[in-house]
Length: 69
Image 1 (cartoon, rainbow, N blue to C red):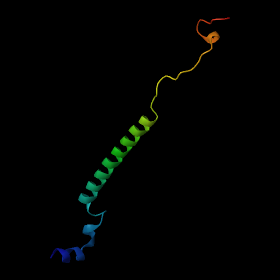
Image 2 (cartoon, rainbow, N blue to C red):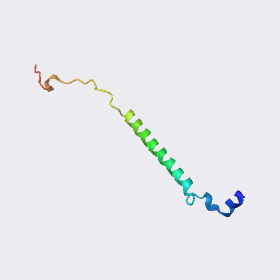
Image 3 (cartoon, helix red, strand yellow):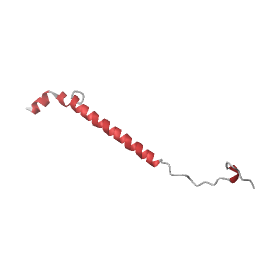
Image 4 (cartoon, rainbow, N blue to C red):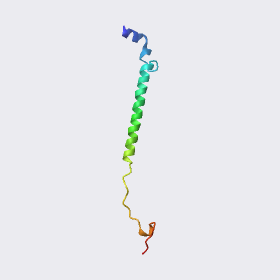
C-alpha cells in the first residue's frame, strides 16, 4: 500500500514539498557550518599565534636614555 501511494504522489519525497525533512536537513547543515567555521577560526588563530618576544639587538644610542661613546 505504501509503494502505491508513493508512486501516485511523488511530491512526498520532494525536498520543497516535505518541510519536515527539509527543515531538519537545513538545521543540521547550519549546525555543521557553524562548527566548521568555529574550528577553522580556532585553527587559524592557533597557527598565527604570538610566539613570544623576539631577541633583537638594539643599538645603545637609540635607547630611551642613550649612551654615547
